[in-house]
Image 1 (cartoon, rainbow, N blue to C red):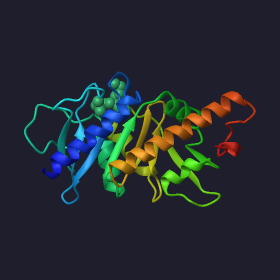
Image 2: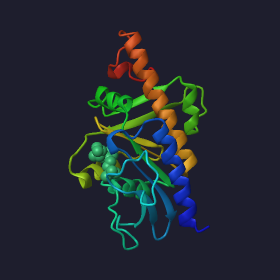
Image 3: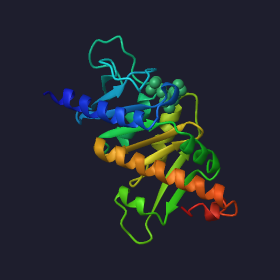
Amino acid sequence: MSVVARKWQELAEIKDELAGRDWFPGTSGNLSIKVNDDPLQFLVSASGKDKRKRTMEDFLLVDGEGRAVEDTGLKASAETCIHLEVYRNTTAGCCLHVHTVDNNVVSELYAEQGFVTFRNQELIKAFGIWEEDGEITVPIVENFADLPTLAKEVARVIETNTKAVLIRNHGVTVWGKDGFEAKKHLEALEFLFSYHLKMLMLQPRWTASPATAAHA
Ligand SMILES: CSC[C@@H](O)[C@@H](O)C(=O)COP(=O)(O)O
Ligand SMILES: [Zn+2]
């Protein structure tokens, strides 16, 4: 099996799993997986598809400028430029983007602050953070309609340890060194978002103010 075919299969399986969680409402979301480092080539989901369905036209191979490598009638995800910035600015091998109610609400709650931090949670270990007082911070950017501007904004907030970026009232973009790690990071983050919102609902005095935002 060629590398492209193997990576296609890996990405298709991840897509099916995320679809099973209902993380692609209304054709939202996109996925990519790196096929080659130099020159950069990655498989990315085709734009506007129902990502719950598996077809032979789910992905296409694009280059380091986001252009299709082969002749195809398919259009790469509108957010390919964001995936490109992730590959340019990190060592990611796979990048996943989903819209969920939880990630949208968290992004709105902490948008003014520009980030949300989680600590005191076992699942932080999913990010390779093993310290007693370990924490993970997810930057939040505004949802610019102009996608190249949005992509630059995402690139601007990526630091060495950044594993994900929230886009305000839009979704989350998460990555990892390979498909397994990217999915692990995404599942762990969605758990943290959900826990955080439930705590806020059950204990309204467990305030979402910047000083206490880290109470995961
Ligand atoms: C249909 S709403 C979602 C889109 O606007 C976009 O944010 C998205 O995630 C999917 O775009 P796509 O071009 O299919 O990859
Ligand atoms: Zn999106």
